[in-house]
Amino acid sequence: MDDKRRQILDQALALVDERGLAAMSMRAVAERVGLTSMALYPYVGGKDALLDGLVDLLHLELGTTVGQDPADLDWRHRLCALGRAVRSLARAHPSAFPLLLNRSAAGPSASWLAAALQGILADAGVPVSEVPRQARLICAFLLGYTTGEVTGGLPGSSPEMIEGAAEFDADLEDLVGMVELSAAPRTSTVQPDDVRRAAG
Image 1 (cartoon, rainbow, N blue to C red):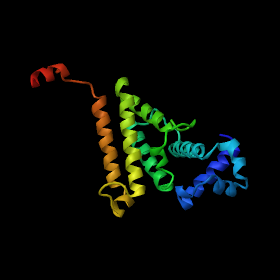
Image 2 (image 1 turned 90 degrees about the vertical axis):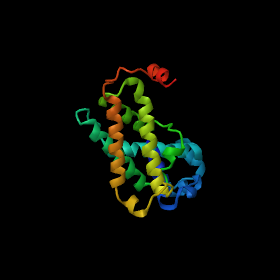
Image 3 (image 1 turned 30 degrees about the vertical axis):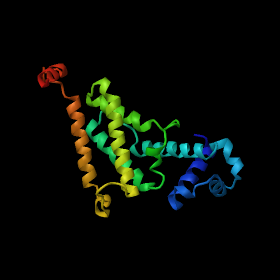
Image 4 (image 1 turned 120 degrees about the vertical axis):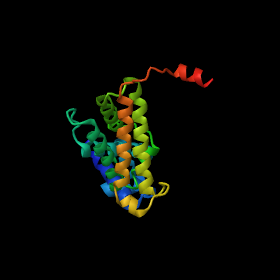
């Protein structure tokens, strides 16, 4: 990422952290980096492109937090570590984090989370045809749960639950169990067509 673009995005993220997403404008960001609003355009485009840049920056930060994804580390530990890193990112940037759920991932780093999940699922032995679907499901849970926490939109949430990690960790263990079931060899010889015929 270009140094000037990174500086602008870092300042935009800091602004959102301090004053909320509604306070972010081209003018406000320009003031923080000592440029005019028009001078930002060659680096980040307009406001929509700037928001896309924040999505990219958040993914980049997530990847840096998780670090290397060693294949020799058990996939269960990798999945739980990734989930906790997503939650940590949400709590570090509560105003900007919902962008990950609400905006398309378009930048060069924005596919990091999906790629990491797909690698974990492949190493777990999930059938290739099931990997994209399960990666989407897990991604939806991680982003949806953590966005709900930081915005107060998670049904039944309380300050105590949000401050603690026990319930989230329990949910991560449920995800591990779901993946294990998907990766387990099918022992049943009953086929879906047989079930439908028996039900009919």
